[in-house]
Image 1 (cartoon, rainbow, N blue to C red):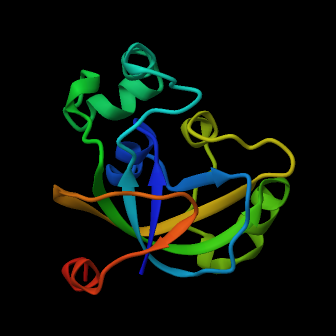
Image 2: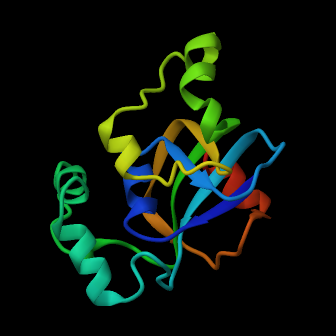
Length: 160
């Protein structure tokens, strides 16, 4: 299994099933189980604690998080694995709509207004499609990394 670190609030949006497409500037051939890790630090576009509070208070983020009882930024775990998912496809964002219509295994993916708002679909980026989401309850304190990084076997068995 691999780990994939996301900044909050996106990590929790994945854990709650509100976000099933993660966008990145890089592609991967990897397919399989991934641990969704909430970064301890904050990065652009959130930048700092005040920025995180603004994201959590503004729609569509506020709406998606509130459905799961999160109303303030301090409720979002950081520095922890918050979910497990299957990375089932990695597509150039320019091909996303077409491929989702063509491939039967991607039929359950909706590329709606919220999904668009929760990602960066600029030209030259890639969409990681996540399926079979399972929240880690409680979150598992863990150090993250850039890219896809290896996860210890004991976390793998705990996510089955």
